[in-house]
Length: 110
Image 1 (cartoon, rainbow, N blue to C red):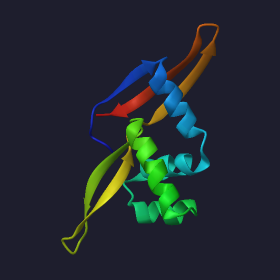
Image 2 (spheres, helix red, strand yellow):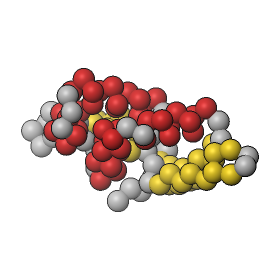
Image 3 (cartoon, one colour):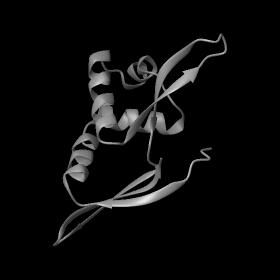
Image 4 (cartoon, helix red, strand yellow):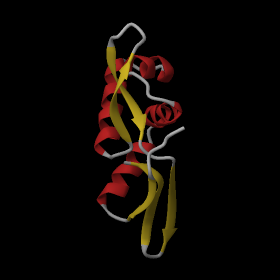
């Protein structure tokens, strides 16, 4: 359970379009779901998505750039550490109206 503060943001611009484009990809959605449970390494995400590591790294980069994913360091029991990734949002709501598409991100972690 996260102890970080959460908030809600709304975007109707370029960033929301990019986020929707990224979420149109099954591999990216799988990564986002897997990293919402707990931080995962690229190797773990590759196994979970059944995609190539190159594809997973491209999707990770897209998710990082869109603010839907964050990089963190995971420390192992043996003292080593690895780069892991975690979702930065808890929910994403899309509203379509005559004014356009509005994306609201709920529970965004700082």
